[in-house]
Every structure is written in structure tokens, then in C-alpha cells.
Image 1 (spheres, rainbow, N blue to C red):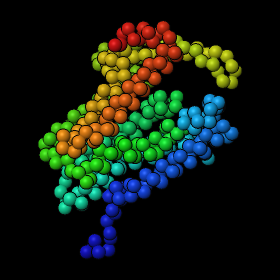
Image 2 (spheres, helix red, strand yellow):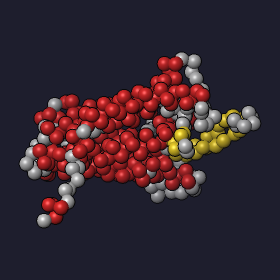
Image 3 (cartoon, rainbow, N blue to C red):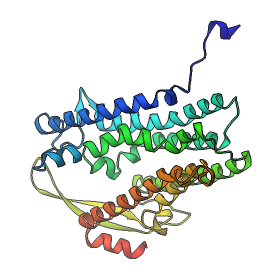
Length: 314
């Protein structure tokens, strides 16, 4: 038969090789960040580079915003192409290994968790240019905190609740798992809807409708220093205060957290213990910190205009 000639690909290989893969990525990430530090100091790709005066901080924070080698954007490749692709494929690899390990019995909690995360990352790649405008990309330099995080922390922590289920099935019924999956997808779709709403608003320069009405917004003026001339240049940004963006500041994070908590609930913490909730708790802390940093950046950048925006949006 066909199977006698062709051996199907072992899709559980990501689970089987996980310990060795993570060890290699950890060592590679530590050495790679040393390379990035020296490259930013002595062979920078852009003008946005320099030392903090501390080798420790240079290593952790980075010395260059957008390092390139032979035209390849290293930061984007690791953040997006590697870590997000690994996360996207890992769930179904773990699901396959669980299915084979437990005598071809489907763990519906793991299956729907893997499916929801896969679709979330389809959304991520579809909206990738939006991510390229996030604080991770435009503010954080390519150092240990970001690059090691994407090489090691994302593959290990972001997949933990799924990986745990290979040896410890969720035992959730199809209907229970499906219900949590539907809630997770509501979070994914609403998160995309909020981001898409702001993208359309920006692309139309405010000349669009939000939820059927003309949007409220603040016209914020700010100045930057032109790197070539050294002169100050006045710029303008529109701060949307309608639709999702008028409900609360950083409200899009609520939808992202909804999806994250659903993925962890699909690991059945009531049976498997609270540890499977670690990713969701970590993401909560990460997004709270990101929201604070973004608020501080906007206050500094827009001044009184951001204060007006805060009065409109709670």
C-alpha cells in the first residue's frame, strides 16, 4: 500500500525535540545578543544606535533599533518569522503527539486551544504591519530582553499550557471545549476589529465613520528633530476617541487577554492545577506594563493634547 512506500511526516517532532531545541535556542540566544551588542556599537545599520554607558544595559536593552545583516531585518525575522511561526505550529504538533500517545483519542481541550492559537496567529501575520508600529518594534532595541525573549521565552512559555496537555489531558468534553473556543475566537476577532478600526481611521485621516457616526478625535501636534538638518519639524497625529477606542484606553488588550485566559482554561486548571494559567497571568503583567509605557510615551510626545484625550477616554 501507500504507507509501505511513503512514511507520513511525524508532525509530533516539535514536541519530541522540544528539550534539545530549547537548550540550543537558549545558548544561541545568549551568544547572538552579544553579537547584536557589538554590531550596534561598531557596525550599526541605522542612525538609531548607541551605548547607554553600561555594558550590562547595552546587552539587556540593545544598542541598535533595527539591526540588519545582508539586508535581512534581524529583529523582524526573530520576532515575527521565527517566534510567531514556532508558536503557531507548536499547538498542532503537541495535539498530534497527544492523539498518538493516548491511543488515537482526541483531547478536545488541546485541539481547540491549538486551533484558536493558530487562527490568532493567522490574524497576527495578516495584521503584521500593525505590529510593526507597536512599542516592541518602534521603541525597544534589539537586545537580550526582546531577542532572547522571542527565541526562548515565547517557544517555552507561550506554548506551555498546550505542551502540558500532552502528558496530562484536559478531559474536557467536546461541548465544554467548544464553548471556551468560541469565547476565545470572540476575543481574537474583536481584537482584530479594534486594530482594524484604528487602521482605517488613520488611513483615511479621520474621514471615515466609526460605528455609523463621524468619529471623535484629538488633533495632536508634536515636534521632532530632523536627523539630517538638526532642525525641529512639527508633525500632527489624530488620536481616535470613538468606537472601541472611545470605550477605554488600551481596551484592545481586554480582547487579547480574553483569548489568552480561554487558551489556559482549555488546559483545565481545575484538574491540572493553576500552573497552566501561567501564560495568561504573565501576559496580563506584560500588557499592564506595556499600557503604562505607552501612556508615558504619549504624555511626553503629545503633552496637553494627550491630556485632552484622557479627558475624553477613561
